[in-house]
Image 1 (cartoon, helix red, strand yellow):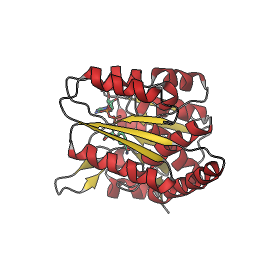
Image 2 (cartoon, helix red, strand yellow):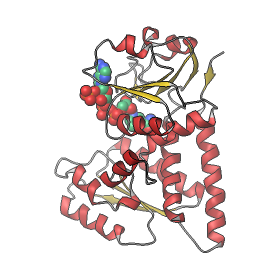
Image 3 (cartoon, helix red, strand yellow):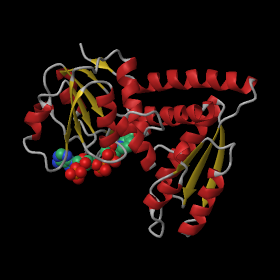
Image 4 (cartoon, protein in one colour):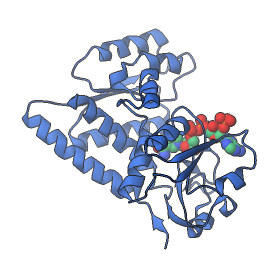
Amino acid sequence: MTQIIDGKKISQEIKDELREQVAEQKKLGKEAALAVIQVGTDPASSVYVNNKKKACAYIGIGSLSYELPEETTEEELLALVEKLNGDASVNGILVQLPLPAQINADKVIRAIAPEKDGFHPENVGKLVIGEPGFVSCTPAGIIQLLKRSGIKMEGKHCVIIGRSNIVGKPMALLMLRENATVTIAHSKTQNLPELCKTADILIVAIGKPQFITADYIKEGAVVIDVGIHRDENNKLCGDVRYDEVAPHTSAITPVPGGVGPMTIAMLMHNCVESMLQ
Ligand code: NAP
């Protein structure tokens, strides 16, 4: 029987644990806060930002909201980041992407203090050498999904499709930390279906709607679908053709309700960890 990995339930468990931790810390006079910066009024970004604020409120983390106009300059944004870096009451800084064309997103990410953000090159370096640090939220969430669903990673062959800095690469390093044998595939990889068929755990972050069919799956594999898209009927779907693939797996994440809810839960987790340090 296929196990449907319930990201909604697992992310709720994590948020409830964090809520308890935050309440305990409050008794000791410690408080956590996340600063969320949005530049412009992209409707999708507004939905993400609001969800983050809601999660903060649920857990008991303060949220400082900065809604800057579309024409904000890079200097203005960098000045705000600098101010928040120096504010000891702020544990995490989130700059919602995408940013308008006049702002260099890489420059802004590098400007955020490493102890307040997961994408900073210093944290990526720490991940490579196995030191603790802020980890990119989506891959960290996938590790939690697997652990909390009782799925063993040690010694398993994990194929990751995608090598982006926010998903594929940190995912590979985290799976390595869990003692999986890791292969990373990308757009230049040859014989992708054959390679995927050797995976005990297949993590798909290819960014192409319903790309992965049953031809890519070893019978009984675990499949994690990172993709988020809207299909022709405006329904949410992933990178995996779920109905066709699920019967061949031992466990699979649905879209929606799989990886998606974990990203915010792990952002909250990072923020609480930063407060505890
Ligand atoms: P991305 O930056 O577009 O990376 C896609 C990767 O897939 C690239 O490494 C690319 O290879 C590879 N690729 C593209 N076509 C391929 C092909 N035909 N065969 C093999 N590999 C191929 O995407 P991303 O930011 O990592 O995101 C991936 C997906 O996850 C997107 O759908 C995104 O919306 C979703 N996402 C979801 C969450 C969440 O919270 N659930 C968070 C982040 C992202 P090259 O490097 O060679 O170009």
